[in-house]
Image (cartoon, rainbow over all chains, first blue to last red; front, side, top):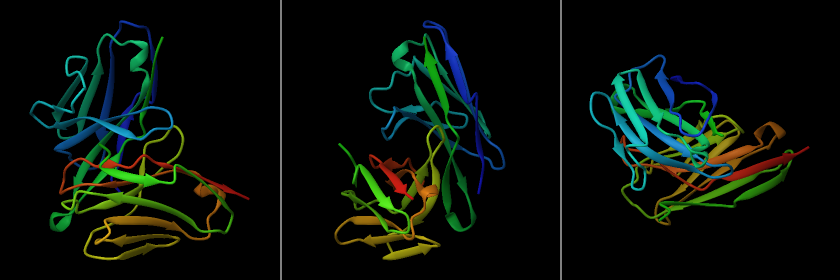
Length: 118
Length: 111
């Protein structure tokens, strides 16, 4: 299947600083990528839908000024957590849609990024 | 509102046994129902998926049973192995839109 990578896999930052997480589709082009947040022992919560070349669509309750998403190319989307605080500590996962033959499509997930804000 | 309801929350199965996880949905527009397997510290990986025009799909030890009229679908893991111990999520979506995930089931297979 298609491969989605994330970088970094884990990051520790101090409160008040900003952190950028990259999501790349390695062997396919992705016009649409999704960003999820997952707390321990909980399900994935969709934060935003990122479309190449346009503004991201944020889910209700997600602060767009705090979680900046940039989908500048067909293989790269970035999530920047601005002025991070300890409550932003979480596991962030991206995914990308790969379109196959005959209108088929599948959503592939990255390995996740563990963010810890001290 | 939880679009996809999943049960049980946790499951312990003896090695060689059958693991069964159930999900239910309300939105009849959903047209794709995947199951994901997630190990600690890793992203979800697609295990098996089904569309509503079939009632069952089998891939190796994994089977999805789908009941369109009841709006329910389930994952059966035959001959469960300790390596199957993970968290399993059912999901559903409409077209190429975002997935709605169930709350997850933590499966433990004991030797």
